Each structure stands twice: as structure tokens, then as C-alpha cells.
Length: 116
Image (cartoon, one colour):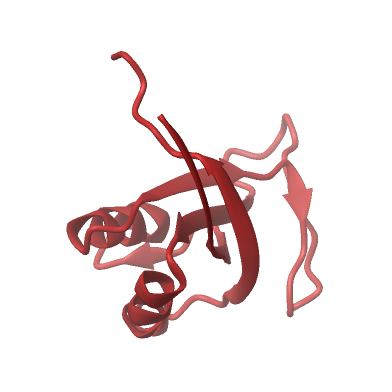
């Protein structure tokens, strides 16, 4: 199915070690927005990066845990994306972790489930 429309892309930049009630924050966010009926989300694990604290986090063979960068990308209509931002901010605040949240306009070319 081909669907052409405009929407919003919400990006959340957090750390791999960020936790919410003992669970990885990225998993909690994805589960919660799925419950809220959001069209889709993807979690991307970075190999190197830094944020507001200017501490570089990168993967090294000697490190068991490098608190690598995590980016959660969420796409849906502007109305739905704007409605979930307060919930995402609440989860981040309760986790005590730092975050960067960005929002941009996107053109959706195709949105359809796969055969599996």
C-alpha cells in the first residue's frame, strides 16, 4: 500500500545505560508509545557519540559497557507525536538520565506491514 502524507519525526537521544525502574529506558519508551497507538519506532545504537556533558562514549574491545548512544526515531502524524512528548519527557525525568529530543517535518512515502 502506498500512502503519501506529511508527518513528524521525533528523535530521542539517550544513553544505553539509562534505566527506568531497572529496565532499559529505550525499551520502556518503545513499549509505552506502542500502547499509545503510535505508527512506528526504531531504536538505533550508535558506535560513538557525546552529548551535553561532552563525554565521548564509544565502543572499545576492552570495555564491557560503554554507555553507547541510543537514538529512538518515532514517526506519526503531528497530532499524535505532539501528544506523546509529555509522556516521553516524564519517563526521561524519572530515569534521571540526560536526553536530547528533536522534532522535524517528514514526508511519508510508504507505510505498510511486511508479509511476515
